[in-house]
Image (cartoon, rainbow, N blue to C red; front, side, top):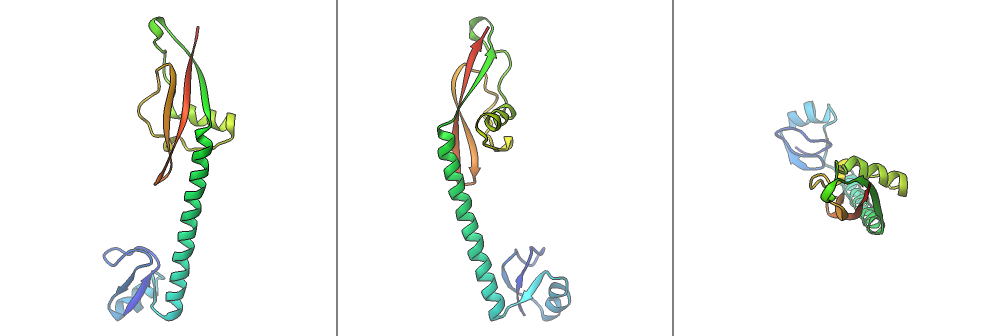
Length: 149
């Protein structure tokens, strides 16, 4: 019997996949426990509609990420840091500080885990920090460290 899986089923298949299983297994386990539905014209139409909706949502997410990338390109965050002799910075700027400053100063909310961590920022001047906005979209933000006495 051919069924459309409504969720991932171990050793059978992934969600939205059409699989051929034994009739008893399909009726007594998969369909009864709402893990799958039988393949019919109606269920195939619903599956196609769901796939189309998911594609549209994904395209919208990519468009939103591209817009945010363009907005982040214009943003420059400035941090005042204490400096010792020879221009050595005391401490560093963390991803948490970058995310908080971005939220407070520009109203852009980004999870600190999305900021690609190339290590702590502890060099004076302009630093480019990469931010994962989507699996295919990476934005950059300018972080400027200024010395204070």
